[in-house]
Each structure stands twice: as structure tokens, then as C-alpha cells.
Length: 376
Image (cartoon, rainbow, N blue to C red; front, side, top):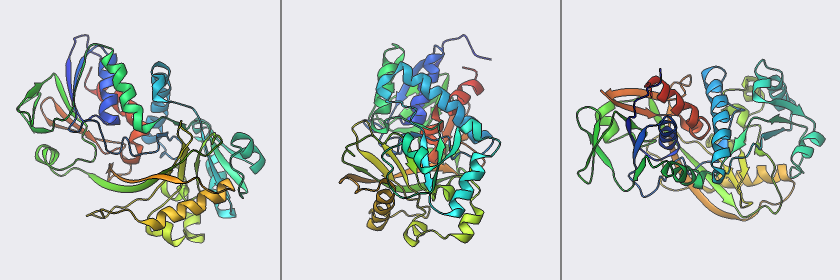
């Protein structure tokens, strides 16, 4: 049951997960002190596609969470236009019989309507997204997918949080210890007490997190991405390639895996194509997945070359010049059935981490569940 008492909530970490927890706390009339060790969050919450990705989510709790989050993102986007929310949907073009079979199975599955799945002919796909002039035989359309602007979403949301008059943002402060119950101390020597403390520390799993939570069932995953100059025309949907069938749990790719091996570079780097157009017209394109520690400190060129080839094959034109390349790390639950890891580490102190590549998609619903569970 939701409390009518005004509570003070202390949140550590200003990425998507921490910011959406702050949103729900303020929506329910509480006060928030939000602590971030950087001037602004710089982790996976910025280094992603900004996709609200319903299409690939696993059946059950993960899909339910994504669908609820998609609903919440649309509501929040209506109130915070600078978030850049747009219900653009996605297309996954396919080129072979095995790829088509996976797409057909998804489009006829019991949950296809909930995801907004429909298998389109090439002509129908180009009517939805005219920029796809390349060679493909069909395309899986997901009308429920959406997008926001990842590099500015937290800033836009924070502006709305500040407007409540009940939100305090404290950047450049690293929380060093949990002090008894309901309190943490930062590296300025200041203690922050609240009715609840949430540690939304993303891929930062050492130091404080290890001290208070021990070994958590969460792994770190590294990815590489890039962003281009403006395309010069609208890319009206997000775009994935058939390798995404191998990566996302919504799809049964066993026959595809057995009968159509990935290209060597894609297999070596655990790759899929995801592509979304930013509001400035440029394309965010990726990605790779590395799971073995220690992660390399450099980016590797072969995956970018592979992505160039795949994108140009789908667009039927050269990719615009690349303006940025980057790597990022996110935290992912090791149990694929779990959407997020929640753990009470002290009385009044909870760790919330590990949504992995689902973080941007699912953050509003994950935060809502936390608020409900804690009786805010």
C-alpha cells in the first residue's frame, strides 16, 4: 500500500535507473536527494541506442516489464518533450529462408499482438521506412518499439525533477560507505540520511557495492558503437538485422544457428546490428558484446567494418561518415530470467542493478516496482 507520509529518498547514481527511481519517488509526493560521482552520468545510460526495445524481450516477466515501461515512457515523454520520445517502431529485414522462418514464427506467436509484430513484404516495409532500399525478402515490423535521446534524456528528466522543488542533485560526490541504517557518507565527508537509500550504481560493482553486497549475480558486458553524420533523409524506424534473432530471447533461433553460421567477425564479437536515427539526423549504429575480463582498453576496427557492410546492404547506399566511436560497459544479471537484481544490503538500503541491455527500455517499470515494493 502506498504511504501518505512524505519520505526522503536518497538515490546513488544518476543514470537511467537512478533517475527513473527519482521520478517515481517525486510523483508520489516524496523528497529526493540524488548523488552522482561524476558531474553527469557517463555510463551505459548515455552510451546506448536510446531504444525502448519491446521486440526482443523474453516472454514472461521481461516482456511484461518492457510493455509497462513502454507505456510509462510515452506518458513521461508527453510531459517532458525534451526527452525526445518517439513511437518509431522497428524493422528487422531478412534475406534467407532460415531468417524468414524465425520472423514468421515470431509474427504468429501468441504474444505477437502484444509486441505489435507483423511480417511485411519488401514493398510494405519500404512504405513504412523508405530509406531501406537494399536487398531483402521480408521484414519483421514491431510497432511497439520506440526511442528517446540517450545523451540528453537524463538532463531533460532532471529539469522536470528540479521543477518539483523537492529534488536536490549532488554531482561530483562519490559515496564511500553505508553508515548504519538509512544513511550513506560521501567523499566530501557528508552524511546523507533518508527513509530509504537506493544504490543504482550501474556497472560500478566494486568498492562500496562489493563491501555492502558481496558477490552479486551480475556480470559486466562491454560493447562498441558508433554515430554517423546526418543521413540526409528520415530513417523512420529503428532497424535490426537477422543476427539480432540470435541475441534476443524473444526468438527461436536454433535452426538459424545450426544452418546459417554468423559471419566470422560477427561471431567473434557476438554482434548484431541495431540502428536508430538521432534527432539531428545522424545514425547510432552497433554493437558488439564482450564478456571476458579484463576488457580491452581499445576499440577494434573489424566490427565497425562489418557494421558498415551490413548497413549499406540494407540502405542500398553508402553510410554517412562516422563522427564518433565509443565503448561502454553495462551490468547484466547472470540469470537470464531476472530483469534486475534487487537486494536489501542494510536496513533501509537497497541495491538495484543488473538490467543489462534492458536498462533504457525497462527503467521506468523497474523503478515503479521498487516504489511499490517499498510502499512509497
